[in-house]
Length: 277
Ligand code: C2E
Ligand code: CA
Ligand code: CA
Ligand code: CA
Image (cartoon, rainbow, N blue to C red):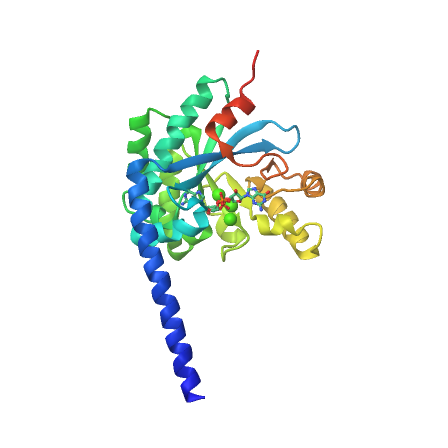
């Protein structure tokens, strides 16, 4: 038994070393890709739930690895966060979203806003707000065209400081959304203190609407309590007509998901939503 224990230890150590080595390689590739332009933003349309009006898009990063092909964000965002590269990557995301929102606007796709994901690591940086504003100024885009999606993890470890940052962002003209709502440890009592405009119900609840009575109740509770706090509510990950119908009946405001539109390259988004007159 003693021997087994040692083997298990050695086994895990080996696994962990392999993982570390792999992450180091990914990081080196990430750095290379950032200078060589191997990243792209996909855009997933956001609609009003009642009359299907396009109100914006969420920008989702894609990495075209030169040898390994497409690598999903879940794999590399954590590595970028741990290494600090997320700051450069996040700057690129904002600048790219600005360049593309200008293309959308000049194609006549009006009254839209681009939502971008903000890592907690970016959000907590002292010069976060001024850095964002600098990029917008360079790109000559007004903050009103950008919505920032922040997660509970970004704000809960220092709520007071986070509120100041959120207020500064709001004062600058950004829209703010609480992403993945319901999965973290935040509560509606905190939500009341946050100067945000929108909550996004996490897609794990939406996926279970038809099968799980608790998820159904949670989705409904978030919609109703969000409204009572004066917030708009978006349901993400809507994949079926049934889910959409339930959310419509509960008066959810916005919808995002494979059912209404998958994430797509900027050119496809342009083609799909430019109204030819
Ligand atoms: P998220 O912010 O919750 O983004 C929504 C994710 O759900 C996206 O995955 C999207 O493709 C996926 N999705 C949308 N509709 C559906 C649906 O109907 N069904 C299912 N099963 N999935 C749906 P994606 O693009 O792989 O992104 C994963 C996560 O990576 C994002 O989760 C976000 O946390 C992070 N991420 C993506 N882009 C960025 C970025 O530019 N910066 C940062 N910091 N994080 C990003
Ligand atoms: Ca998001
Ligand atoms: Ca989300
Ligand atoms: Ca998520």
